[in-house]
Image (cartoon, rainbow, N blue to C red):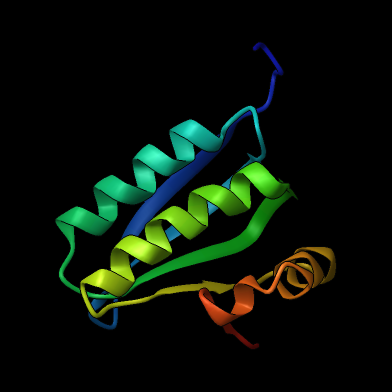
Length: 108
């Protein structure tokens, strides 16, 4: 499926945990690539994984699904997934889906 959607990620270690600065579209067109990236980073790291959404332009159920997949993997390893810099609509989507119980949200 050619949707033209894309995203990018920059990885940094901050305060002992991995941070992915995501940009672009986290939707059905990028979900599999996102899932692969998140799993790779989670498996290479011993600690928590943080996702910075300050440059994310779109988020849909498929993007959330990729995040849920890695959140479950991290939970099995006694670590967690945290998201930060969510836009109002993204935060609402996370809360309405109930996923804020699985994925920690860092408040500004």
